[in-house]
Image 1 (cartoon, rainbow, N blue to C red):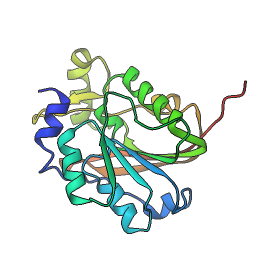
Image 2: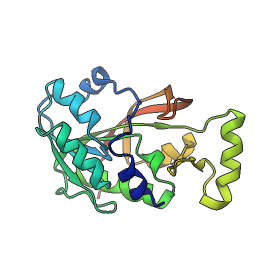
Image 3: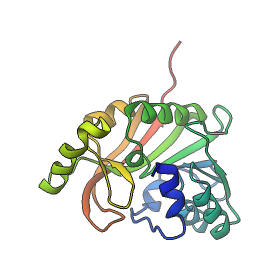
Length: 214
């Protein structure tokens, strides 16, 4: 089962669990900001933001069925299907971008890099990137499956779940490299509960878009 097929198949039943810290987000992003949620799933985070008074919201996801659910549950918010890594917005058109447990769904370094470049492109100067995701888990259960799937998936930290999803946990070195074109505003370790009920170390990252000097 490919990953689009998997996420389409669970679009009506999956409940995401990572907590969204709206108070922290509001310290960096004003209520009238243009906010883009990349990999929005069924729109859970944008729905939270709408209820907190944010209205200029757009969600993108590569799963058409997730987008269908998002439109049904939050018709007041704009949701669009995303094709590959391309975000259908103009350069410098967004004040903030949210990447909420999305990197964990992308195994390859190259595709992660392409997505971050695309987010950097659509953000305005000094635009904010808000990220929550997973780090490598040191317990033996996870270390064993990292080793098991490293050869098959090509990355230490990637693994397949029995139901068909392929996920990835990350080194902090990789995360620092991935966000190298952003100025770090906040980086915090957090222990999350995964969508299957396990505890796993993760992080919250907030970065500001840096402008390349000519």
